[in-house]
Length: 274
Length: 335
Ligand SMILES: Nc1ncnc2c1ncn2[C@@H]1O[C@H](COP(=O)(O)OP(=O)(O)O)[C@@H](O)[C@H]1O
Ligand SMILES: [Mg+2]
Image (cartoon, rainbow over all chains, first blue to last red; front, side):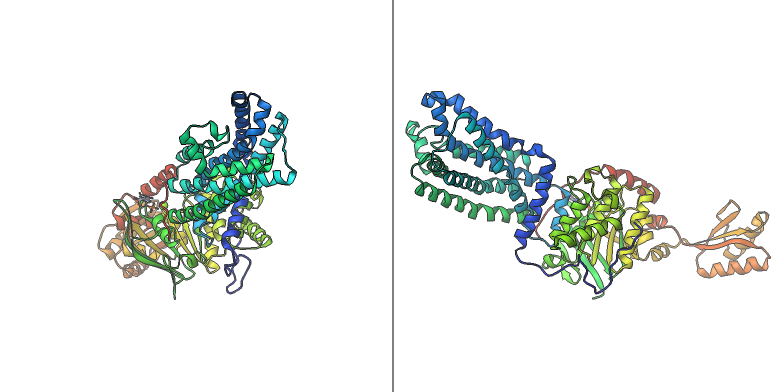
């Protein structure tokens, strides 16, 4: 405590303010993502839901509905798995991402970030980036369990990897919706509810669980225009074979559009509320 | 540009509460400004405006010559802030907290580590650097908080009640760190509810209450301002206390106030009365062991200025209330 804080005048020491370097948002976002990851590593319980969610969905669909829809659980597993993959990545993005930023925004450490010369949206980006570790965890869990239950990819490894990348990217793009809601509402309970309810019409108004022909007209109409339908078609094509180009293109377009619209909106709302 | 920071007529309202009703604050480069005031006086609000966390409703402020609203981004390159509430991350270690902040200031990884180690040593946390902050005591957190505000070697350091809640011994440790900051050329704004703290650290003190400046002066000047100088006389021979009292009463023309412990105290109006007393005691042949002209304590000065609760009780009340104060959601606005 008694040592002096050396500060010779005019000498530029490590730690002196320096000229801004390029790409501050990415650099600072990356450093803050590292912080969130360290916190996650120390509280691994926070990742539990990412691992449990796919298990619940898969078991529920295959054993609860499987018999009724197609007569054989094994057959139904092949049908439903690509959709559950999309459901998993979307819900993983929705449920976790918004909440952690709200919790963070209320902490004193964010006051310090705001008093520092860092990119204004960097804390938001850091939090969202760090939450992406949940996707590979959830997807690995899902594939592992499905394999045990008898699911087999009918295409090849490259296509399967493409399906994983596409669905994770799509889930990530849509997760900015929750991020936006979170930044606007700033209440972790409300955010949890919104995040839980919003995906339902999106994911279930599709051919995920049963062919669209079996649905009532109004639901069919919704499934037609619902962007998540494209993601499920793409996932099916990549994992089981069938048309790929069109659904993948549409998924990329919708995902890209969501990202381009929602992420800047969320960042703007965040900067405004900070 | 002689002032490191300068605020004029700052006004900030929260709904119907007026947190700041037009205050001026300024400090010359390399000096320590103490902002002294009871709970709710507006200290935190003022610091948050200077640190670009809040925008004022009226008035203006510059830091390093830069406007805190229009040039907020550049102001942030000059300042270091240690807020009233812990701004370190509980789940990280002390060292990790400091390295992260160094990285956010664009230090290369190795330089950020070196700076973290250096600062941990300076605030006496070398051994605790590898521990998670959740295991830190309140005093350790405050010291880490201080270090966190110093990562970028800021020219201007804002410290919001840095020692609130610390044990007296720990407080003095922190004082010496703060003093060395100023010795090395930084300008420090320090808010406090402790009169003795402002007295011990500040070159100038601005006393605020209810969002207004009540006084601005040096610690000595503040004491002068309220008058109340006293002379203390302690004869070498305790038996001659009565004789000494008669001499002093003849000079000042008023009865002596206290007579206890072998010493007497009397108020004087002018410094000249002191020399007269010295002369009169000498010609009466009374030897003195102690002869002093005393300025009032800052506690007395504060009472004189604000007319509010006795300072001793103010300090005591402040100690207890700040412990129980919960963190009111600080209003966030873009700057
Ligand atoms: N975010 C806020 N919302 C409403 N009132 C506030 C807020 N922050 C401070 N105040 C009020 O403004 C006044 C000054 O507060 P503050 O600057 O924190 O004083 P101090 O730091 O001197 O204790 C107090 O009356 C306080 O209740
Ligand atoms: Mg305060």
